[in-house]
Image (cartoon, rainbow, N blue to C red; front, side):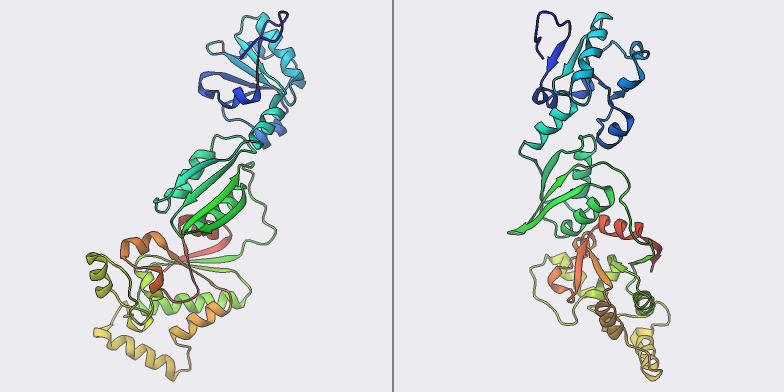
Length: 346
């Protein structure tokens, strides 16, 4: 902060210096109108619109220096002069909020390193960083979890932030995000999607899930099926795929069913006899098999998502999954659920 003229009884601060302030150690006074603050406010700032006069200036605490800003800097100079006369330690932001936003837009985006973090770690780290940042600030994020590519798209869409760029290079997912206002994202269509959490790996429950999913898709609904924990076995390939696994992962793989043909019934499985009986009845009655239901769902645009966090726990690798499966995390599921009028846990 520096004095500009001998006549000024208050200080001036540039946009660059303002960006380096610890906002917890100063009192921010925003003179803009409430609608401007709603779109591009700074958390913790006191909003006293210039248009409402100076009647409430004495309510501003004196325990910390006061930084005054408006849209372009003209109003803040008048208010800073008044506050200085009333004994405040005060300075004004040269060029107002406009200069601050212009300064931020010209800076190289800060890099948020989320490599090595598992779901929901990368999304949480991005959200925590941007929470108190002003509208217009841009960041870069790098993550190594495959699910992040899906999660960051959904997170930006549902929070109103802007996903400027998303690339994958040498296994590193790189995203550039610009902080936008947190108004609820506009939805131009009815929220009548359907979302399923497929937790169970039982044959009968899986058949029911895919029958409902196919029916919803036939009605023109967008369907997301989120497979987690035991449900991941449904998506495993029938044939063993060679992958580098730890001893524990190999043991888990041996104990869990590999693919749909190995699934048992939730009741009366009878060592697999019950499952074979159900499949025989379905064939006799002309009902599509589970494998046919899965193919039909994929052909009709049903989104099949495997929870990567659960895959890491269960020791299941992406190479072991059937074609048409995408990896996702908690943000992918929450985003789909918010656009749905029905969510089922199976």
